[in-house]
Length: 301
View 1 (spheres, rainbow, N blue to C red):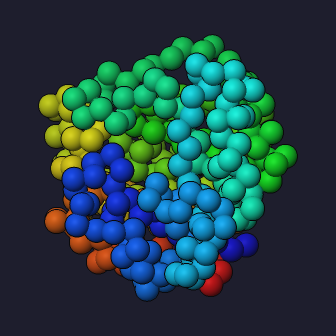
View 2 (view 1 turned 120 degrees about the horizontal axis):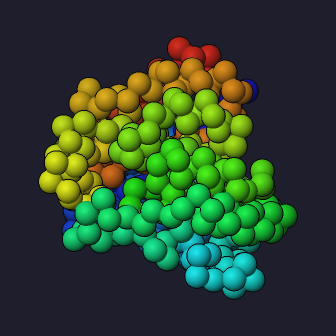
View 3 (view 1 turned 60 degrees about the horizontal axis):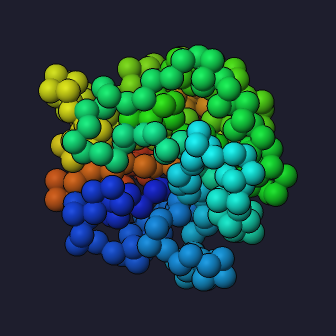
């Protein structure tokens, strides 16, 4: 069993809060990521849109495509409509051997609204989430048949956010739909990351590692603030940051025990003025190498 270590460039290029990262370029981020040792990057909006251009761009920096965000609208679209909406990305990711598309429902999310407290996020009933899961399974099977796995991203401010939502989505869907497991979003949502992994590890296909600064999270909850308020204030950080509160060794031990083989991706959006992206991304990389070694997880280089 073996894993690869990738990164999302969100620390250098934050699409939700572009003013935070205005001083940084995608090219500089790619150079930094490769220099640190990351083997892959998730697709960013500022990368070439065409497949040939994206392949050449990745090759220039010697990194692979290890996934990428997809804003889903299946709650308000038919399966046929959604297939057409995501077809280009599915075909591109399949052509570039990406491990998955990172899919999240965005038709009703408040994650990008800085004026909306995260407490106002949409909360659906069990029946509604399970019905959505059944519909999503059709899309996931179609995507897998075309060569690209669909991994669902539970996300703060979204309709699938906490452990209960994840339970309902997984129970309502087939194994065609896999789960993106994100430590930072789980902790933010009040879930126990280890418990979620215990329950749904067999459906996990892709992993995001990010830590949480508990005092900032407490500040968000106490003031009924938005998800982006928390991000700007530094609620997230990389694994290995002494200010973080998540036990990544315990999680990595679980990944080893469940024979996880895939990508571990650092995704930690922060204010680069307070957390220099290169420095913190290197902290994250070095920490993952260390804990994988302790857990017995082999890293493919």
